[in-house]
Image 1 (tube, rainbow, N blue to C red):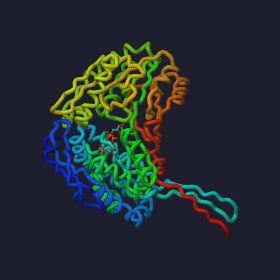
Image 2 (cartoon, rainbow, N blue to C red):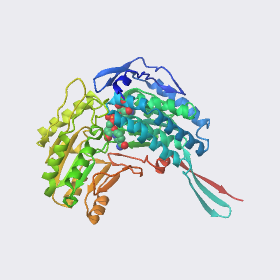
Image 3 (cartoon, rainbow, N blue to C red):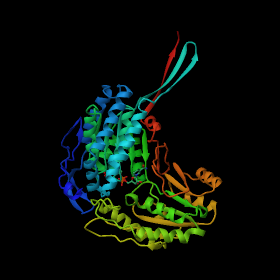
Length: 493
Ligand code: NDP
């Protein structure tokens, strides 16, 4: 397929989608939607404003209260969500093009997100729609107390740009499956696929006004959504810094509950007993450079037992140096540009900071200054725990290797940052794997003995720890997060 040719046919339409139709934003100010592969503007995006959010929240509130979705049977919700999953797959080409043009994801990766990842997630939550059951406590012959789940109401969802269509689905699918109405604010860098999802949801049978999407800036629409007193909960995916602001905004308004999926600096601990250095290195490089390292759980912090560190680093460098970013519209491209000039500047600053702080750059990436946000991988070895490059989330193709000699040291290093999203332990020692799984403070710990597994999917619920956030989204627990638990007591004859 000639994706460049196809990309010229995209019709850009970025404005609020409220009550089942596009409406002009009340804001007259705009910013540019920049293609990071060329640094040229694709179209204008309205800054958005508090009035846009107010309209969307009012519509969502009215639709929630009239019961058109909150009071239908869970089977109907399941049916609509399954239809939405089907429509997403059907529209995969358009969705993939939008994500690739707006944030530079290689087209085959965007296609995977639209064809498999996002619809798969929706189907999983759709299947839970009728399984959200409470409890009945029979106290005595005349008293029964029921615990029942009810949707929370209007959910404000705010998302990051790194997996545009998937991030949107991760918010709206469990929230809708539980019967809520949603106002979604996608990232300013990649809002179009979320708008397209809202159109498809309508086509799938979702009543108009139950899903509303308001594009714009975090400082305008994002803030207005988190502050709005008509919003019953905010669900946020993004950086830890913004997550903390969201909590503050909730506290300053109606004290709405908040769910935060924030940043990470996931440790990957490799013990010498693993043996298969090449297999580990291949998985390292793949995990670190997936989506150009712009993944919350990116494998960019490697803790390696001294005995095998030289061989593993040599293999990582050899493999990483072969990964050069290219035009994301070519089907053969594995690594595209970073998502924006700001991301490029951020990665550049961290690479300079790492060198200044004394980390050894065993592979130094090339950073293209203009004409596309292309940055090739950097690998730092012998990184010390106090260095910023290993404590802070870089969100780019920069790998850090730390060396350890004992299991205790490995655990201390693994827990040595503010984050607690995910971790991986590479060992063949069962006892050790259990000890580390217990000791590492992370929402998920994966124990590995081999590099590649078919059908590697993450469907189990987990809750981020420490500065990585709190609350659960995946699985049945995700529906619980978007519900409130009510007790109803029947007392007397
Ligand atoms: P940001 O925190 O910069 O932005 C996230 C969202 O918040 C954007 O939509 C942004 O708007 C909005 N926002 C910004 N300021 C405010 C504000 N004051 N009030 C309300 N909303 C605001 O993160 P990025 O978009 O740069 O995404 C990268 C981050 O996301 C990384 O830290 C990554 O780890 C994390 N992430 C976490 C995931 C997880 O599951 N744990 C998954 C994916 C990403 P704007 O459009 O202006 O940017």
